[in-house]
Length: 288
Image (cartoon, rainbow, N blue to C red; front, top):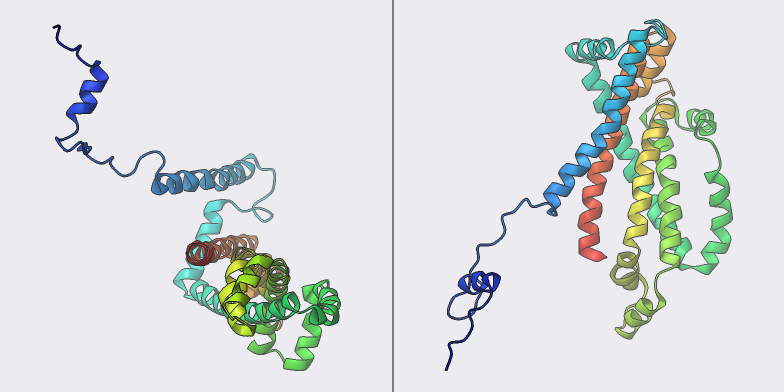
């Protein structure tokens, strides 16, 4: 009787990598492969830097070509020098701190109120009919239109500034929360009722978790609105903050400081949005 034919070469390699029990004993693949989350994050970061670097190069190119004079458009190094001067004097840190504090407090207040109002309108047809048209009308009011009233009602202190920022944060959260809760899958609600859930227990256990993706999208919009409303809020007789830096620099013709304030606002907005993005990933893993 002839001996059995030897298996192909690739099959021999595969067999040799297994023990007598048939368990694959090949070493695990090293982390950091092409498809790993760390590699994807690095790629995304690299792609995200392309546009800012291109804008920086274009900015420097326009300045070098003399398209605008230095008063109209100072170069990146001049703006950096202006930032360094304010930093050494301790002003830039103070402006960033007070503006961030105002945004955070106003954002938290506006988000909480928006979530509460959105839950009421989204879960009650009666509240939807009574409140939705009026809230929708107020949503169309420009931010600067509130400034005179807030000064009359609250004065020129912190309360009026934080209230204006809270107004800006309220509407995106209200809109998305109401819409998300209104469209929660009815089968989930019926399942919750089958387990005896009613009222607040139903909201916290079934409806809010189901609406998390839409609500968080509104929270991110609310944060962006809070930074937008900050500048309008700091027009209310401010002597500190990035909005004040913008206004004061405009009055004094300091274009370098105007550009510095814009860049700092953009960086702070990006940083805070990234923090909300981390919360979003955690919330989606937890509830979605």
